[in-house]
Structures are given as C-alpha cells and as structure tokens.
Length: 98
Image 1 (spheres, helix red, strand yellow):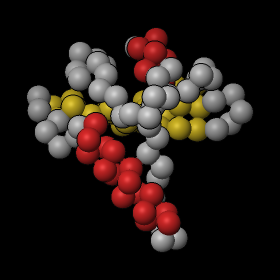
Image 2 (cartoon, one colour):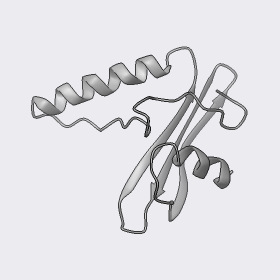
Image 3 (cartoon, one colour):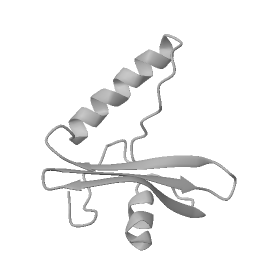
Image 4 (cartoon, helix red, strand yellow):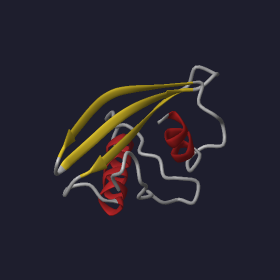
C-alpha cells in the first residue's frame, strides 16, 4: 500500500515522504473515503484525501479549492487544496477504487 500512496504522492511533489499514516478510513459500498497524513523529512505535513462516491469528482474538488481560496482572501481559515504538478485534480486508482 505504501508504494501505491508514494506513486500517487509523486503526482503532486518531487520529494519523497518520510512517513505515511492512515488517519481515517471509510469503506462502504457506495462511499469510500480515506485520509492519509504524509510527513516530510523537513517536518512539513500534508494530508492526502481519497474519495470514491457520488459527491466527489475532480471538478467538484476544483470548485472546493476555489471556494477555500476565497475564504482565505477574506481572512478566514480554510485548508489549501493543492492541484497536481500539471495543475489538475487527478482521478487515480487506489485500493481498487477510482
């Protein structure tokens, strides 16, 4: 599983993860979600979120990223949603889900 995560991580960053930790997981028939913390050697941390359900798509993630950016512009806290190195929010296969 770590190799699968490292391959997907490589779509976003060139630096290799130092530590990978599954934070939360849900695996229902129509709703798969998993949050994975990725720690880097320089102590920086990121969270990869995987989802396979009716309400998550690359287009929706892009819209959520724009919404979060607008909240930050107004001075509110909102997490950054980071596109891959090509500027997209990719659909990937993970644990047999897309």
